Image (cartoon, rainbow, N blue to C red; front, side, top):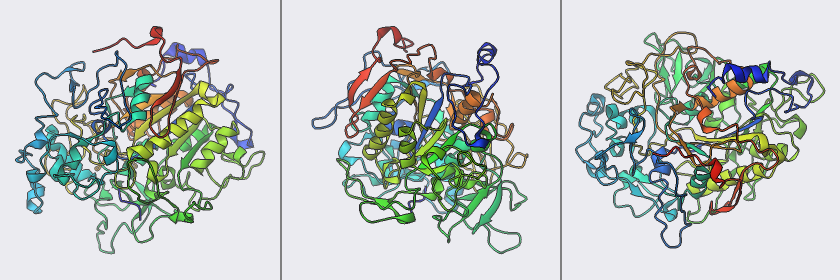
Amino acid sequence: MRLPRTLGLVSALALMAVGASAVADDHDGDRDDFRRVKTATPIKHLVVIFQENVSFDHYFGTYPKAQNLAGETPFVAKKDTPKVNNLVNPLDVNHNFGPLAGVDLINNNPNANPNNPVSPVPATTTKGVPNKNGAGASNPFRLSPSQALTNDQGHNESPEESAYDNGRMDGFPVFVGTSGPPPAGLANPKGLVMGYFDGNTTTAIWNYAQHFALNDNNYTTQFGPSTPGAINLISGQTNGVSATLNVFDSSTPPKLLHGTHEAWGDAAHTRSNITEIGDGDPLMDVCSNPTLDQVTMAGKNIGDLLNANGITWGSFMGGFDLSVVNANGTTGCARETNPAAPGTPAFTSVDYIPHHAWFQYYASTRNPSHARPSSVAAIGHSLIPHTNTPEPANHNYDIHDFFDALKAHNLPAVSFLKAPAFQDGHAGYSDPLDEQHFLVNVINTLQKSPEWSDTAVIILYDDSDGWYDHQMPPVVNASANPDVDTLNGVGVCNTSNGFQQGKPVPAPTLNGGFGQPEWGRCGYGTRMPLLVVSPFAKRNHVDHTLTDQTSVLRFVEDNWLHGERIQPGGSFDTIAGTLDHMFDFDDRREENPRKVILDETTGAVVFATGSDDDDHHDHDRH
């Protein structure tokens, strides 16, 4: 990103059991009765925590084994923890996730060879860019808690595809490695991209994996940075715009001014047919940079579908309330926070980053002036309670509004959370320790509320930041943009044989925003963590189901909307994998739901209830 400035459709029997949906009518402003709103599962509240810029191996590369050095928060795994596809235990994704014999990714990694990539993309040589790892070559290495704050790595679409080198996964230092502090003192700064944390730093998220469910086969919907991830999470469609600013020059035919942010959808270069591949700002947001590119996306998002069905929902973003004055005196769009997490040097970040603001990209769901809700009771609703007057916030709120709504027992059915930037996990201005504070605060607070008994929290990420991950994704949607795609050669991002996990060869191309197959959406992209934290999540479970960011869309659509899809044949939700296998809906304890309370600073377990019953352990071990 730019630095600041089926549930698969449930079975027919299950659908018959819940009957036809009886949703609350939001048009009269009445409160939802969550017991009356019919859902396909016991989940009545979904909280999606969408964090920033982490690959799976960057956080879970040695899970569940931590070094436990003196002075660090200790982590000791449960003895029956399932095996995970990671650096120390690579698994074969095409053969039931069995072990890959003879592979040593820690000590003999292909990125440690200075002469790799073996077959660099030709475009990189003709542009005069180095195409070998050279002095940046490195094996993976551990980053300690004192090194939590690191430099941002490269993660635009083209460099990421080049680093993946047709599935060889051997070009990370040269194509996405970024030199420069922090952390200071690295002998090989370009090799920083190979660094990983263990449970002595990422303690909380490892503890959530121990007590709930982790997916090790989850990917970004397409290659690229933050904005495509944010848009895919809520719509699965990054092609097609209805309005732009500072996107085209004045020539005829027009040229794109920001080729790493927008790309042509096809050779015709139609102004409306562009794909958002980078971090353009949302058009009209008062905090968007007026000198940079801004776009409004065409089509629908999940907010439109929820509105049409009378289901409450909200987007809650750190820094969105421009009236708040921080302790350091900053306010408005410039509101910023200087974190003081242990082990991190002092640094400052703007709290609200416009190109993370998913729903601001759509005319139907944006709140460009950051207007405040009329009341806490109005949070989640389209109309002011008991009136026909549109609610000024239009479902877009600050993160403090989430806690206010929860305290008032007015939590929307579906909530999308984005931490203030210093806590979102993004390298360069955030870190796993500050991120841990946010995750634990949200989940602890939920667990202490009566809403917890029917809540699921999904933790996932927008992109990988370029951090090394050893697993090549299956390409389920092809692209052939000559200016962008580099996975298999110049202008080619398609099937990489050997990694397809049963997907079609060659990969088809989904329709763009206007109904025709379009370029610029090659995916799946980089592998990232996905966790489900809920009384209904399986316990100490590792799920290998192939999923992506739009699997969250699918869960919402199947649980509340009878499986309605946003754009059949166009949105990635059409082909998304299910999150079903991360839940056990027979494990229902309404009167005493499972809770795991963690320390916000260390991530260590303070206490756990109902999580160590042997009758409920997952014994499907490798």
